[in-house]
Image (tube, rainbow, N blue to C red; front, side, top):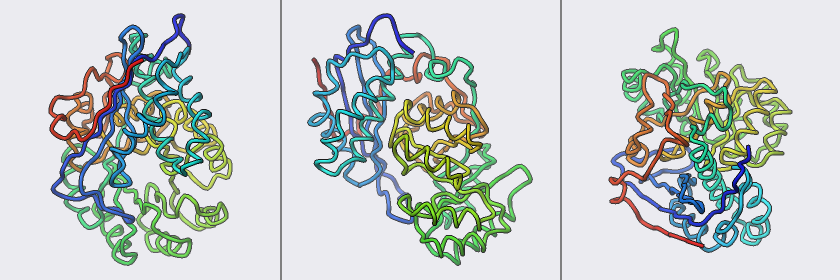
Length: 383
């Protein structure tokens, strides 16, 4: 998609937030003791704007670092940039930052900031065109996408699933990877309480080696999981993934820790993943993840975008899934997070579905005022 009048980036703002939480979010590899987020606002020569979000969950000090990285290491490549299409900045920055990322070994942070900027550009272009982002991606996009309840620790699963069910959810995902025997028994127990239309998936967050993953897959075979997510680290060999896929009765899922067009195409071509889960704020933004999703669907895999962050990224994930189509589910974290809940557009998530906004762009006009109390850093850059 191009426009008759090019977009010139005249202003970029970035905001870091940290919100205290009563109950930490525990995964197999670490604990989140607060909920961080980095939100971006990009403005063009006419005052039109777009919002984006940058991944900031890990490391614990990541949010403020991403804001400083944008200011000190990318601003010279962004301010004054001329774009004919929403994806132009993404492709420009991928090439222009390669040596900078290599010099410091921080490929992830660069990719994450670029992803946030890309989301903001799609929001800006859609706002200029007076259409929702999903319609700019695909004129035949859906207006509603199904969702699943995520972020459920296995130790608290009975209570959390009951609450999610009360809110209308029928699909659930539990976090495992802590104690193999206890996790396996708990998963089997949980499936006994599911109704015919409900499903359960499990996420190990890269906790296991091949032998342990094989054992878990055998022990929960009767559970008929919707999928087993990241049972192995993303850096595991293709041979290990293929061996697990051949032995496991349930579909395998991964993608949040895969980055790059070629890496996504490779795992799709090798066909050991049945569910592909790129994360719009970790790599690719909408430009990269839209491509990855279509590669997955073309190969017969299922596209279910990964997301565990603030309101802007969740809105972008929903718009992307609506544009891509297929039988994918939107990941809906059921842990409390004011950095998500404060956004009016996120109130479209109900009855196990996300009702897409008909407003231009992502449907976000400004950052909610109540977030100011959580702000820890801010930059405002102009040409």
